[in-house]
Amino acid sequence: MGGADERVEGVMATDFFWSYTDEPHASRRRQILSQYPQIKELFGPDPWAFLKITVVVLLQLGTATLLQHAGWLKILVLAYFFGSFLNHNLFLAIHELSHNLAFSTPSHNRWLGIFANLPIGVPMSVTFQKYHLEHHRYQGVDGIDMDVPSQTEAYLVRNAVTKSIWVIFQLFFYALRPLFLKPKPPCLWEFTNLVTQLALDAAVVSFWGWKSFAYLIASTFVGGGMHPMAGHFISEHYVFDPDQETYSYYGPLNLMTWHVGYHNEHHDFPRIPGSKLHKVREIAPEYYEGLESYKSWSQVIYMYIMDRTIGPFSRMKRKRQKSQ
Image 1 (tube, rainbow, N blue to C red):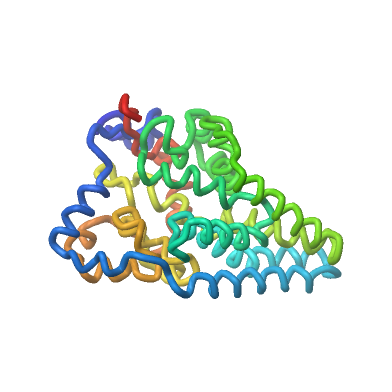
Image 2: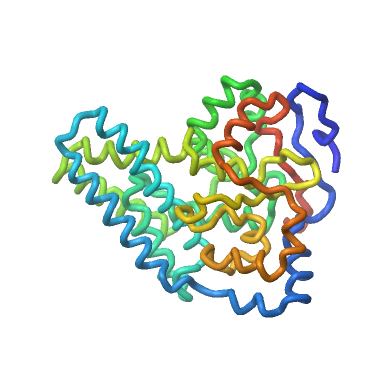
């Protein structure tokens, strides 16, 4: 590794951490499977995914209808302390579905993803999958992995104030970054996602009014910003230890986030549903117990903002190979 790994105390890096080795997950996967082949028995869809998603979608849409005459303060308070958890749960359900972990048929997962997308208010399910699978296949590869912040973000976000603003609006950066840096032509599935979402949004406004719709949008916005569940955006791959590029979280919020906190385990075995990722660590503990991990996503957000050496440049990158 080189570049930002020679960190000067109290000074933020001016370049990414550059790795000249392959990402660690493929090799670790091979090692674990050679030693513990029974892990393959964990592969496959989560039979409870459809039910779990349906309950959250109906609960969130039902809550929105009940708020059609509520005051704005009540709407904002409920959006932050209730709706944000539901919509973020659905965002991570979409993450699960991007790996086809609800049904064995990919198209069924896409339809369920479009359904899970409804309370989020903005169409993103199909587009997310297009870019997220590249994040797994080309982790950290310059110009391909759109999970890594852009140079512009890294140069602008340089202190606690700008980092706080970046955290609040990080969903916008995640959504807009690929469109500017690596736009892809839309497909029929994205058009279906768009039309379905706009139809639901129009129905909410038509039948229950703008306050119900505002509740859904506010739940998405605050749930993806300065919010405990949004700490996983930072905890997963932001480099706090130059020798490690993926980090797991083993705290209680895993129960509400499809266990996305088991992130080393997830990248090692993306074909295992979140509900079973803890079993990977139980079967092969020696591969994970020595890795740095977190128990609080809120603490990760605090560390990211207050540590003067940490910022958008705190990510591992790799040069693109000619075959890529």
